Image (cartoon, rainbow, N blue to C red; front, side, top):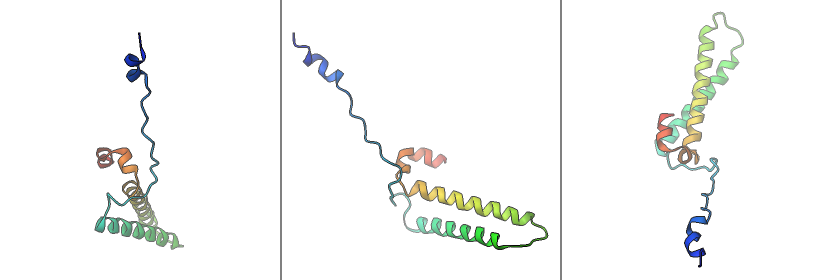
Length: 101
């Protein structure tokens, strides 16, 4: 009895999908004015961080510290958004998870 015809389709290993690195640059998901707005937002927040660091002396620094926190947070979040939308990480995570993020 020839058992190779019976068991051949079930015993062959499945081919694994090739893993993609999430570092490939693509602009499919963030085009036109959205890309330029996010880039300008990132540049402005970086300039705000630099300007805040130039202040040498202040008398009531609580507002300055809050401004530093907000500008640094805006810079890091806009950098994260650009990274997710402009790399293959968008496809790796899936659209629903990106929208939740």
